[in-house]
Amino acid sequence: MATTGTPHSALPTGLRFTALLAFTQLPGVFSFTIALPLLANMAEELARDPANAFLAKLVAGILGPAMAVGALAGGWLAGMCDRRWLIVALGGIYVLTGVAPAFLESLEAIVAARFVTGLTAAALMAIGMTMVGDYLPEDKRRRIARETKEI
Image (tube, rainbow, N blue to C red; front, side):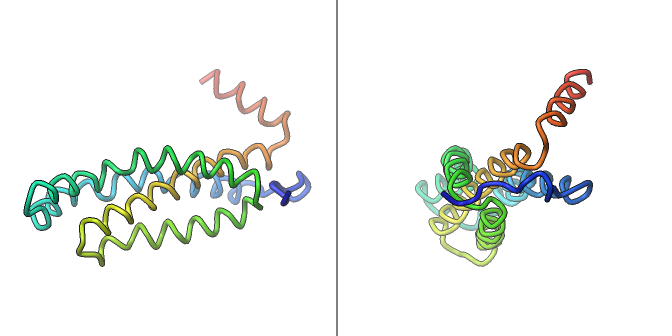
């Protein structure tokens, strides 16, 4: 089995750790919010029949099922691969498929790209959260959990 974590002596600190957490959670948010304002125009331009109108709605709707599968896949992969390289690879795929709909004209291709975007976004979120366990010693995780409950 490959190394899944980093020893506590090589912990990212401060800004690097915060960036890890933020940049693994933001793709999920961006997946939903960026396309929403564009959906009405997309449906108007590309939905010429009932099947295409349904596909236009799937541009946002496909994210839920994709994220369910992506979170499971991300958790499974996180146990088998070095999580740092996994984040880099999934981040690259996320960026490519996230931008792809701007260059695609087929609704089927746009929905497929959005599926992969949702899949990679959820995998990034799952892996980012598991890395908290890799990088924070147990006593610090316990202290943060206690402080969070007090808020």
